[in-house]
Image 1 (cartoon, helix red, strand yellow):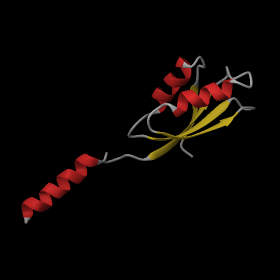
Image 2: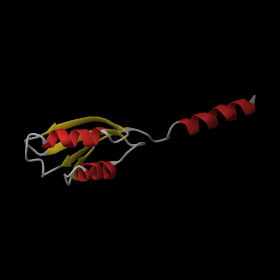
Image 3: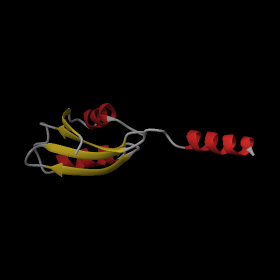
Length: 95
């Protein structure tokens, strides 16, 4: 019986990250200056594994990204925007 409990607990601990959680980060993207820029940025961020939602505030030149922190992080998100041609930096973490 103890072997079964140990096996179940071990499989549960290996099947999901222990501290995985949905997080939110706001990125400032000063280079978003035209109507097509937000589309390009959204596509780049949507392609990052773990990104759940992208909300663009075009007037503020900011993007709020909701993501699974077990799959990605703000550094990867910033690399994605940079690779799409738009440098970004974190202005706010969390809600």
